[in-house]
Length: 337
Image (cartoon, rainbow, N blue to C red; front, top):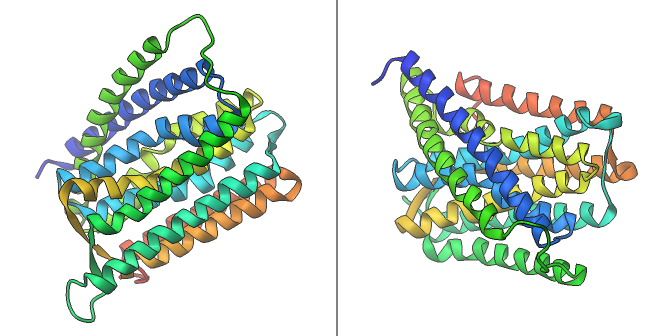
């Protein structure tokens, strides 16, 4: 096993590569959205969300397919979703002009509602894996198969259909601007290489840290890796708020989290065939995810804006989440047992 100094250097270098690649990736997807004149909510929920979700998507697929670390992968997906729902809107608000992040009623109900539906769908699929494919009699661990993951993938296709319908009503699709889409795609491909290399290093570092400290890989995925690959979205949110496009900020958070839940793990399962999931450890986290989503819905529904006080509250709740994970790691709490 490598020394902690080497592993720390690997983690830092990997994070730098992920952030650099994600920055270019986000810019390329934003330029493509502008090129085809997509409405702001569709641009945030689909195009920008897909670009900003790629780091955690690759991290999840790499953790499962290359390292056979299912718990780490689930931790990455859930940790990233919690970070996005609580931290990105909070920081975007505090760093936006006037310290208030405006939104609209349609975005609040459509995007948040579909996100909660996504969490419920994934939780149901995981429960079915325990019911129909238990690892042992009476066990809370089940095998997630290719057949079961078709449900969340199908739901995401339905989500894309809804966004396509919105874009069609807007009249999007007509190319505009002085540059061809090929130029933007070139930047996108280059960024994917940086993100892929950085994510592989970050996953390896998480595994090494887990072994060195004798802690769960699941917790490293929830905290360090999940937050690390999601940090670029903070910059996306701040940039959107400063460009007077707050709808892009909120829709990107929810669209990206929806993509992570419905696509990341299912794609990895399709590649490897089946994975074993501890349902007992997942349930408390998904309950927290639903609570975080409802909290965000409550916050943005009041005056259709996120105020400074509400932003601080979101960050405080995320701090509580980190404290909970720390207590789990030292054995003070065993809700994830």
